[in-house]
Length: 557
Image (cartoon, rainbow, N blue to C red; front, side, top):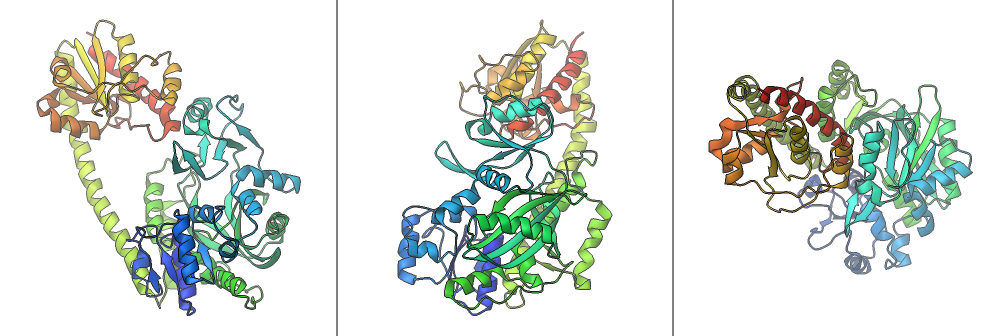
């Protein structure tokens, strides 16, 4: 057997499933440092430097050499690789996949929506939008790239689902990367995330399993870090079977639903491969990798297993990250899938009651779970130390340094004001433009620490600035220098990273520095860089506007 991208959750569970049954398992990991390196069930592990799931030619040569009985693509990247026209039919067939055309359909969210609609199955209202489309009249809405993997500027990028709350966020999203690809815009469906996992053999349903997501990361909705098995429900099974039968399905797939409290279930999309919560199905008694093995080798497929219901599994590393996010979350936000803290703590007692197991745990392969736990402990021990250091620093800045800086502002005549951020294309030029309007008698300029000058502000920044009557089309980035620092009576910076860069390069200027976030009513210190999250630019711009209003009242005599 060959498992592609064996470092993934589905890949490692597949290694343990097949390896524990005596199969000879070869693995190509995403990286050499994953827990699969300690698995005693991997017969041969290839180096990612020698073999990659993206290197079609090398994979074909390996297949011809080893003549694998089963190939398991554990990630969508691996699945797309097998769709390459260069892959010979014999190799494609060993992956136990539907026809290439039907697999293309399953990977296309809009094609699946069209198919489900034609079959009169329940789906959310949906349309295709582009940057030229008009904003919707009602919010929230959900923006979904039609393909989860997109080629952007010559590179393959993961494209994520985003919940949009208002017109400003929609405009920002459509002027970012989203505006350069076909986007599916859907109504927002609240409810529980439910997965119906199935095994088909040439269009005939063999096995089914259902689970519900308990903890989702991110909190706006995503993959589960904690989940529970549900009994087979005729409504969900019939919907999923109808959809996959229309594609003459072969192999495994998960049909994802959102189920409202009323019981109304909406088909959201199809995951045409093994899924991240695979451990739950296996631990409950539905071993999907073994089912693939039976189909690939022509063995008898056992009848539908009678699996355990009400059983939980947890991905330790991801669930700790979920727990931290749940602690910090704004519980007044109806779009965040938060849970009460105390019950979430007591959930960790379920393993002692025999009601829960952990991903990658196997008595015959303890090295993998030991590595996962060690990784989680190291990461979070480091995080705890980092959080404590940040908290102490924030307390110092908030209660000692910043009040002193504000007193200096009130005592001195501010004639030259300098705004700094990292790239000088998002936050600092907007802050400078807003300050110049309110302080016409003050010399205001902006700069950044990024070495490349002459860059323009991105379209999503221009759109956010325009909502406040600011035109940044003529702005070009500048790199901060000694002259700017010396001339400035007050240096306004956006985040702690900017503060560190200022301290390292211009330590004598620290007494003139002020974190703009201190001017907000919440005194949150930092106004974070929205460059990689353009949808957040409107919220960032609003914070900058509010902080500049307060700062201007201090600077004015």
